[in-house]
Image 1: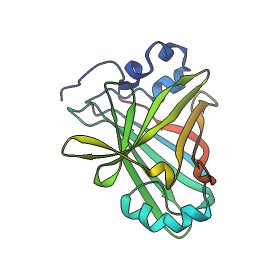
Image 2 (image 1 turned 90 degrees about the vertical axis):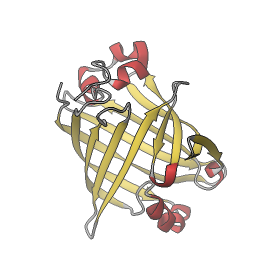
Image 3 (image 1 turned 30 degrees about the vertical axis):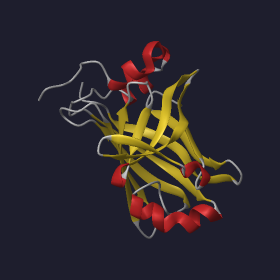
Length: 205
């Protein structure tokens, strides 16, 4: 196996802020690009949908975007990993609802601009700034795109769902809390989930 860099992918993305992060968060983001490193976390989350999100949930399910169900105290397992030979970062989430399980897999790719894009099915992606603010890792909305024939075409999904925002913060040597929300510019809260995770498997570095 050829590892593209011995330096974690997010060390270059976060820049000098990497050194201000807690050791736990550095390990949580310690995946090397192009490697077979993995981090596994388990937690319990809430998932909340607005009436608009409930209406759109069948389309979200088809697109493999977000989670089309809601609930409280939902057990979730997330596996983070890279692809051998590629500079990317995978989120493989399994939400264990009482009546069903739902897998939400996405893949993040860094851009030369410093932004990231989280791609889901059919080349649809969420573009965002990924960085560190104080003790938090934050994701700030930069728009939606559709990748076709290698081109990134802007999509006006802000006027359908809204703007995404996420943050994570360490709570212990092995745990962190997270929060993700989508807010419509006119209708307010659309969709979100959040809760606490414990890291159960560290990267193989």
